[in-house]
Image 1 (tube, rainbow, N blue to C red):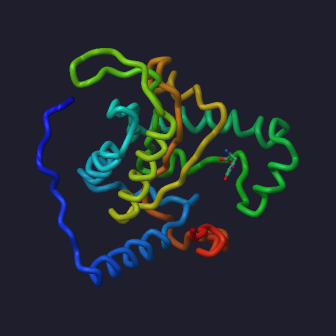
Image 2 (image 1 turned 180 degrees about the vertical axis):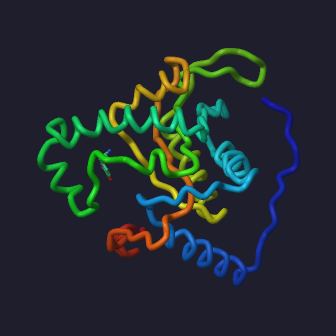
Amino acid sequence: MADTVPLQFSRLSDDEMRSRASEFSDHLRQRRTVRDFSADPIPDGVLDACLLAAGSAPNGANLQPWHFAVVRSPDVKRRIREAAEEEEREFYGGRAPQEWLDTLAHLGTNAEKPFLETAPALIAVFQQSKTTDEQGRESKTYYPKESVGLATGFLIAALHQAGLATLTHTPSPMNFLNEILKRPATEKPFLLLVVGYPAENCRVPDIKKKPLDEIRSVH
Ligand code: IYR
């Protein structure tokens, strides 16, 4: 058992809880996936603060089985775009079953991914199957996919809170990310996050989220 420290936690009034919950909810509900990015740079320090938030996510045995590769180099972004578009051309050109393409059609996506070069930053999120714990011992990780999913959720929320737009991009397979970013085979690409500001006059699909009574039951 690790040493213990006092929990930092402050209880809020009922009213304060309700107003914080609804303000946070309203703010997160404004987030939209953006596919049309401006090239404007991100201020120094913003991404690192968001990554620290991501790294605080709950995870299996506190092994923190994630790695975030931040890409700002135009040359590396270009190589990622070329490799992703190659996969996407196969996906849209035959690999994806027609049923999948039909379900996706309303989003208007295709194999062209110019945002991978336009956006000021890409964050490749990797899931580690092995990691080194605080004592320097190598360990197999537990619940790596769930852990990395939670960390990515924290990251997307933090980036939104910081005033940045994101796109969750998952070219499949994404193994080219290991090669380009020189990550070991024990790390599996989980998601490629495109980060920046929306282009001027950016438009997004007119889609709706399910209402509460469709996503929750009370027991
Ligand atoms: N990875 C492809 C296809 C795609 C799949 C789903 I499911 C989406 O919600 C969006 C896109 C692409 O990025 O175009």
